[in-house]
Image (cartoon, rainbow, N blue to C red; front, side):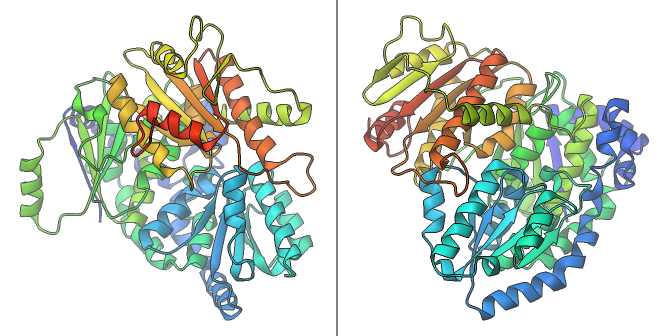
Length: 548
């Protein structure tokens, strides 16, 4: 089942709002697809975005076809699954497969080295799942092109190795059927990407990788009636009130996994919450932490804009739960436990409820497209790279105007950026690099949080553009941004396109920095030209195991 408890400021938020949420019948109206819940301006979008409440039932229709496809692939020795998808198309399958302990190659990057690594597996044993609502996502289209060309170059029938997940009637559906790809699965078009975990987007790649997705849907079905109940004790009401109802608003949600048994849930929730709430100058910033040596630095202080979100295991014995409560005194926090399928539905309901409390439309993403347009413009124009303000030991330094006045070193530039961090601000580290080869770099999050005394997020580009990227631009103007880019060992062409993967990721990084600057956000851009420079930068930032 599900357990959600609140303490401190979170408990006060529940006390202040739960009765009203239940009295206004918000949960049952969400389940009934009532598009009026978020106001007249949101009604047209909400009317076509509430199908997620039924996915635990409706998605079952594709399970027989999925089972037959997996059996057919297995009979042909095709047992390596690559997922080409961004944002909601990749985050849920990554959590589902990691939690189940089955392998899935998630390709959610345009970094040439990371794409080449995905291509380096045994192609004869590989099926690629291309997931995109429309097919127009430049990252996913580029990934499909390079894999199709690689299959053909290897003497394989590419159509037998490509499976597509898309919306009905999309350009991608039409093109895929004309191309004769092995299978095309159609998702519910009335579900937005970040709410699509239990749709074909989450289920198809997970099932092909070997997950018992029927059990996942069963877990969601077991709690669906409870989550739609108009009761103050409804876990979604408790969580939604705790997230969106604190006063003053605790808009930094520090997510800590304390043995939940679910791998990477925070990364999925990050997109769901940030992209759903980060608009109109407000929003909730999820801060995903992986602090093995204790609590993250953000929870060591009593900052009144921080709320701890603890992901824990279900208690087998009430006495065990009591002992845990005695061991860790509750602060301003909310604690969540439950199986993965149940939690996916829980967080979706809670986010929709929090959006109502915040007075925003949780189903649109008005600022996501701005960075995409900027990147496309740079690709089309092929401009000369912006000159660096200076270069320090293999690291080219660029920044928004005025930030680098009187600065001539990387460390000085970092100090200048951190000097703009306000008392309620946050630092976002955005690394446009191969996340498979540079996993240790993410450890700078904790060291920078300790250094600044403020919340710090770490995102891999370009995938974060489909999640926290919305909040960076549409949320409260309190963030400061550190962008890290680098040179690939070798560039990689995108077949039948006038650009390479290297040019694409460079344009995405530059476009995002431009849009942030246009919004008045301070941005420091550090471009490393070789592995030694990256190691030095990691050392300056405090990465575990890095050498300065």
